[in-house]
Length: 607
Ligand code: FEO
Ligand code: CA
Ligand code: CA
Ligand code: CA
Image 1: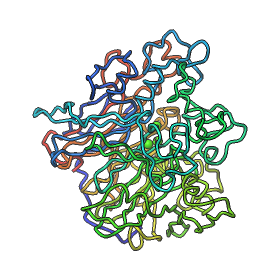
Image 2: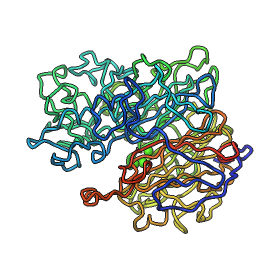
Image 3: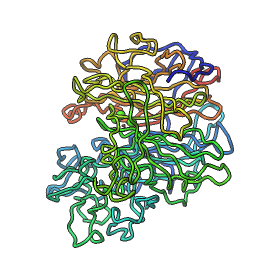
Image 4: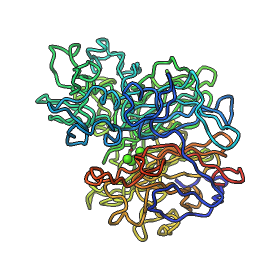
C-alpha cells in the first residue's frame, strides 16, 4: 500500500516493559485511574453496586465486560460528555454472589436441581449485556464523575429494537414477538463499535450464536453456518428460565409451533447485525441495520465522510477463515441531512486479497459473483441473512480472524487486525495470511485505488506480531523487546495518526508457554510511516485491553479493561483464590472498568 504518505506522528513516551502484575502500568509522566466498574449506578433510582444486586438493578447499572467505547462530547467539551460503551458478555462466577447453594452447569452457570435456571439470574445476565450510555464530567481536580442525566441509559439483551434495511419485514425474521418481522428484542455480545459520520453509535453483535439452542433435527445455513448446530449449543441456557417467560424462551430456536408466528425458529436471524443507537436521544429505539451484513461483527469503521460522496463502512467477521467486508451507500452523504437511513440502501462487498499485493471488492448483490437463485440465493434479503455463505460463493479471501479496523485520517489507508488462527494448516497460507498455525496474529492495511467507494485496492502487511524471529515489523526486522505483542484485536488511529494496538491473548494461554514472554494483555502505539512500535500500557492479570478513544483535545484517553481475573481456574475459584482483585484491590472480586489516562504536564496522549 505504498505511495500514500504524510507527516508522521510523534511517539514521545518511553516504552514500558511487559508485565505480569495485577495492576495497570503506563509510561513515566502519565497518570491512570479506573472509573465505571461493572455495577456502577447510572440511571433510574441509581441502585448502588452490590454483589447480590437484582436483575432489575443491573438494568440501571454499568454492564459487564467493557469493550468498544466512544466519547461523545457535550457542546464540544473535553471535560463533559456521554461515554458510550459495549458490554460483551458476563462471568457467571462473579455475577451471581447469591448462587452459592446452586449447582453449576457445564459452562459455570448456576442451575436449579431440576435443570431450570433462576429467573432473576437470567434477567441479570441479559441486563449485564448490551450498551451503557453515561454522562461523565471532569470535576476540576482530574477526577471524572457520573452525572445524573436524562440521556443516561442501559440498552440490554431485552431492549426493543427495530429492524431496518433489506431483511426487515421478510420471512427470515418473522417471530411470535414480531409477526411482521420488523422488531426484535435486545442486542448481545457487543464487541467493538463504530461511530457514524452523523454522530450515532453502532454496536456490533459478535458471538451471538452461542446464546441460542436449537433441538431441530435439521438446521439450515442461516444458523448452521454461524455455529448453531443440531444440538443444545446455548451457553447461557436462558431458555431454561423457570418461569418459561416469552422473553427467555425465545433463545430456543427449535420449531415448536405450527408456524413461525407461533415460536422463535427465526429469532437467531434477528442477531448478527450492527445496531445503531442515538446516544443523544434516550427515547430513540435502537435500529439493526441489516444491509451491513450478518456475521460475527467485530465492529465497524467509517471512512471519513465527504459531501456528495457515498458513505463507506468496513467491518470484519471475527472467526477463523472468515472475511472482511465493506458497505457503500447508494445515496450520497450530505452533512445537513445524513442519518441512519443511508445504511439501508447500497452494496455490501467482501474482500479478495490477491497474491501480488492487489485486491478487489466483490459485490454481494443479486446476480453478481454467482449470487443467483440457481446457486441458492433468492434475493438480496437471502444474501444478507446468509452473508457468510454469499461470501463463500463469491470467492473471498479466508482471513485469520478479522477484528478491529481503523482509517488513517491523512492517507485514507485502512488497517485491520487479524488476531490469530492456529487452524491454518501448512500449505493453506496465502500472501495476506502468510503463517500456518498463526499463534500471534498480524495487521494488514490497504489503500483504495480510486476512493473508498471503489472496488480495487493495494495492500501490504504492517506487522507480523510475535516474539523474536517469529515477528516482522514494517522494515522487515524482528520486533524489539519494547514492541513484542501477540493477538492484536482493538485498533484505533488518533487525529495525529498514532496507531493504537490493543491485545487479546486468550485467557486459556495467557502467560503460559510461548505466550509467557508477552505478559498480560497490553496496548502499544505505532508510527504508520516507519512502523516503529512502542508499548504504552500493560493491564492487570487475566484481562484483555479493548476499546480506546480520547477527548477531542486528545488530553484524556479512555481505555477499557475486560474480564480481569478470567485466568482464575475453577479449582482456585472454588477455594476462594482469585488471581486478580483489580481494580478495587484487597480481597475484592475483579471487575471490568474504564481507564482514564492523562499526562502530568497536561499534554497530548502519546505525543
Ligand atoms: Fe470480541 Fe473478536 O473480539
Ligand atoms: Ca475484540
Ligand atoms: Ca476476549
Ligand atoms: Ca478477541
